[in-house]
Length: 117
Image (tube, rainbow, N blue to C red; front, side, top):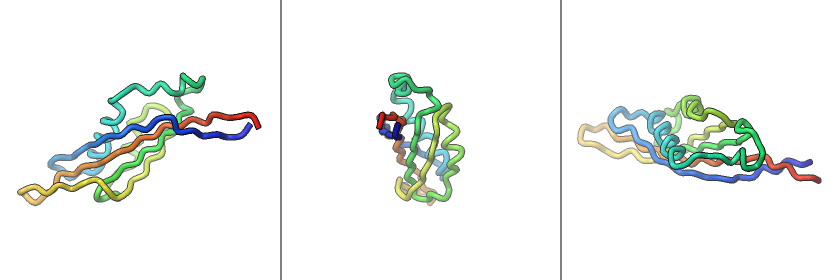
């Protein structure tokens, strides 16, 4: 058998930190926004355990180094989670000089669907 990882689902979300300029909070809210759109039952459809799901999370914010990737990964109750933070998102200026921080999130779920060789 050979490994055949197949992406089966991609969800998108957006989160914001309105006043605290908290990039991690914006990222967490973006992940929750993406997840709350549906219930992911892919593993069961393919006869796999939920822990077998490969979950890739990409977070885009203006200050990637400020995101706590462990806090983002902790949102997921199961699966093998990999969080990547890249430049992007949006810092929206406010009259007080402190921006509202926005994060864009993409979550991809894959399974290893072994095939006979």
